[in-house]
Structure formats: C-alpha cells, structure tokens
Amino acid sequence: MKQNTHQQRTDNPWLGLMIGNSRLHWALFVDNTLNSAWDTDHLSESDMQQLAKTNTIPLSPSSSRPIFLSPNLPITLVLASVVPSQTKLWQTYPNVRLITLNNIPLKGMYPTLGIDRAIALYGAGKTYGFPILVIDAGTALTFTGADANQCLVGGAILPGLSLQFTSLGQNTGQLPLLETRLITSLPPRFAMNTTEAIQSGVIYTLLAGIKDFIQAWLSLFPESKIAITGGDGNFFKNFLQTYIPEITEKLILENNLIFLGMEKILIGNN
Ligand SMILES: Nc1ncnc2c1ncn2[C@@H]1O[C@H](COP(=O)(O)OP(=O)(O)O)[C@@H](O)[C@H]1O
Ligand SMILES: CC(C)(COP(=O)(O)O)[C@@H](O)C(=O)NCCC(=O)O
Ligand SMILES: [K+]
Image 1 (cartoon, rainbow, N blue to C red):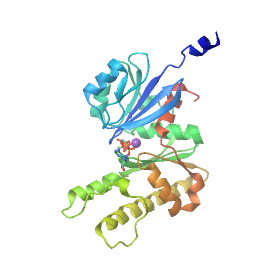
Image 2 (cartoon, rainbow, N blue to C red):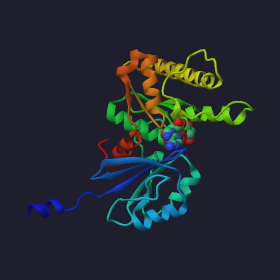
Image 3 (tube, helix red, strand yellow):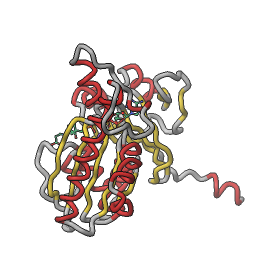
Image 4 (cartoon, rainbow, N blue to C red):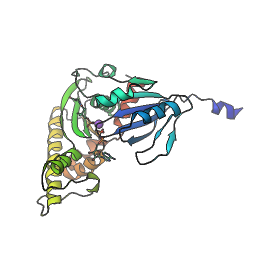
C-alpha cells in the first residue's frame, strides 16, 4: 500500500549539541538533514538523565514542557564543547559521540583551537567556499579564517558584546549593567547620558574593530565571503551593513553555521 511505503522509517534522527560558554545550542537532524535548532541554558545532570530515559529535554529554561524527539531510545547525541565541565557531564550520556579537532578536515589547526571555531569554519567553507572568514559573535567574539587550501590562516579572540557590558557593570561602582537585547538602534557617537555612553563606547569600538579585521582579511583574500554567526550575529550584521555598506554583499548571516559544519563533518562530501 502506498501509505505503508511512506510509513517506512528511514529518518534516523540524531541530536547535535554545541556547548558554548553562555548556553547550549541544540539541533535535531532527521534523515541527516538539519530539521530544527534551539538554545537552552546549561543543563543539570538530571536533565541529561531525562534526555537519556525519555528522549525529552526542557524546551527552554523557563518551560517545563518537554519536546518529543525520537522513538529510538536514547537518541544519538553528537557533542562538541568548549566548556570542559559540561563536556565531562555530557560524556556520561549513554549514546554520545564527541567531535574533536581530529574529526575536522582542515589543515594547519593548532592543538588548542576551539572546536566551535573549527566546526563553524569548516561548515562555512564547505557551504560558501574557501577562502572564508568566520565571525562568531558569542560569549567571546572570534575571527577565524581559512585559505583556498582549507588551511587555517588564524584568527583573533576578544570579549563579546555581553561580556563587555558585564565587565563594566560588574567591575565599576557607578556603571549600570546593560542588556544587549534592549539595544535596537545605534546610539549617538558622542553620548550625553551614561547608558548611551557605554553603548557608544562598546558598540562603535567593536564595529571599528570588526571593520578593521574584515579589511585586513579582504586585503589577503579579496574574493572571500565573510560568514557571521553566534548569539549576537544578527545584531552585528545589521549594524555592519550601515557601518561598512561596501561589504554587505560579502557578509552572510547564518545562525546555524555550527550545525551546517556538524552535518558536513558527519555526513561527508569532503
Ligand atoms: N537567552 C540568551 N542567553 C545568553 N545570551 C543571549 C541570549 N539571547 C541572546 N544572547 C546574546 O548572545 C550572546 C552569546 O552568544 P552565544 O552564541 O549564545 O554564546 P555561546 O555560544 O558562547 O554560548 C550574548 O552576548 C548575548 O548578547
Ligand atoms: C574562543 C572561545 C572561548 C569561544 O567560545 P564561545 O564564545 O563560542 O563560547 C572558544 O572557541 C575557546 O575556548 N577556544 C580555545 C582557544 C582558541 O580557540 O584558540
Ligand atoms: K560560539
């Protein structure tokens, strides 16, 4: 019967989990294709055990509503992490595969390169072509580039947007702690109140720094695309378009770069 043919399950679901310094990034793959992606806070051991026993995880920290993922128990978890304490916890999951630098088909990597940077770089290069520069606007803001031979050229690491606000808010006597999600437009450059003065200092300095890194990269690799990702990726993409309009067509926002990378690493097409 037609219907039965359709009911034959070949979808082999698995979960991708990228553990970042601020939160967990999840993706459900069905038929080896990215199906959906979401973020949660870092989870506890009992949340991990719940996933192993029921294939459900909290959808978000504020929600107790679980998400049903797969009839196969426990669902395969493909893990990458830049947080060793969380790596240790998730390695006790009964059906886990850890991605390490050895799994990434890029040349010239140094041993302490962040696995998130390597996966995103590979995913971006395979998706948009090498050479490629990846800007990951996460807890840290990172630049990571590879040349036409899929060889790491190198990069840079600095405190990300929230971390810059947090460092001012937590280490001064009079400065408020600003939240990035409340910033929807560029502040005046020369601000006349404390909140906008902090925004101006952090945002314009970050934009100027990002512009300088992009220009330095493009002087080496004029034809390269620039992929931007991470929790603040959208924020920076929008403001960069205003700030350096000439690079607009080279700039690609892809929130799921890490999962495009996982897909390419696990499924091949190298
Ligand atoms: N719910 C959230 N929790 C934490 N950061 C968030 C959230 N929503 C947006 N962000 C922004 O995302 C950035 C962190 O990026 P993300 O890619 O999630 O980090 P990481 O991969 O390092 O965990 C923060 O600077 C913050 O501005
Ligand atoms: C630079 C990072 C902290 C970025 O982490 P994230 O902001 O994505 O949570 C992470 O990639 C890391 O720990 N890297 C190791 C050092 C390196 O890449 O050289
Ligand atoms: K990241």
